[in-house]
Image (cartoon, rainbow, N blue to C red):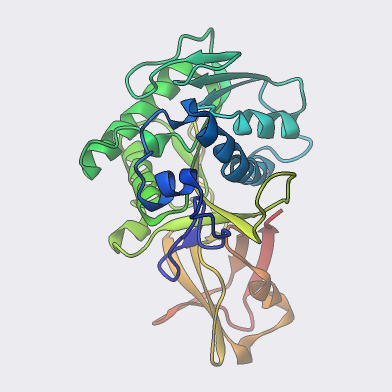
Length: 337
């Protein structure tokens, strides 16, 4: 995730998207936002634009999330539920990563071939059994939009609890993906905090911190991650795809003791020093290395980017954050692939 106060997003997934403001889907979901909460995918033109402009971003975001949550060689889910399946981008990402053996059930309020229909704001889908993986991509932020902000956040948290309680298999995983706009990201963080306080679900990514989200303390802050984009036939390409997300699991794990940090900002080079923000088990901290303290053991600090996970040993508390001095060790554990 990225600390978002330094650049405001201008596209459906964040500040680095190409200018698509001429499309009706962009105006309706990002600009004037008049389409949010409406069944816009029933319109053939909007559906085509969504498949061209938004679906590739969903696939890119999920490709990165899945690679971290289900690293190669480990067992994958056998059954998955794609809530708000839309044009099927999430299902395509799941099949691309896990292979055709995964059983994906799609649910949407707009009828389509092979899709279960349900009003996901007020009812659970009529599906059989439980699922090892539930994905809701670009869905949660479109529910309860007519309510005041605090009420819609609370309603969305209740909805996630209901999905998990009725549909998630024991030890299963829930993935929530939202656009990296300030409003949508902050509201997802509000859902995060409510789920931590009121459910047995555990936040396993991107957070190592289990307290209230520090980004919500400042109304100018929000968080998002980034994935490399891919140029697809008929689609739009961008240097990267920005998105907000949460991954939750049903079973609680024992607290970890490793000094792990999720990098939640772009690098912030300054005269005589390098700074990034990292969020770890004790909260969010500036990670600061003076140029004179650069050493082979901490060289990886200069290679870190938003969304990376780093193990940092030997950092020293200082007035400007956690100082990475010559003796500190920085290891980059997960990158942007």
